[in-house]
Image (cartoon, rainbow, N blue to C red; front, side, top):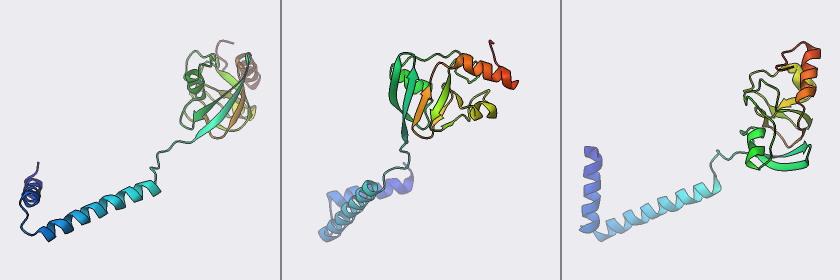
Length: 161
């Protein structure tokens, strides 16, 4: 403990154990309680700004429709896996196209995909391993070969084609 803090702590401990003037101690306690109450009231009316939004994701899979909630900073593939929904994926970096899906409704963010092109977005293809929701979504999964055909037709890289 720093010297100033130690002396302050010691003085407060001594005064609380052996008060010189009980009215001073009572005022100090009332002030301390008022500060704690103000802090609690402030925290209750101003929750932390770190609350993450989540969106409803509906997937059209070969096994039928599946829905779950996905955080705005969570990849759709990861959220699906945490809800026991098995989706194809190989690289988890946005390169191989194995996780490709078709966005039927909503919007996503692909900022961290290794190979996602404007032409993919124009045709509503998304990479589920790297896409993060920005609204509620409706997605058709298992679009790997359709996205490869689109890439080939557009002159874009289509791994494993």
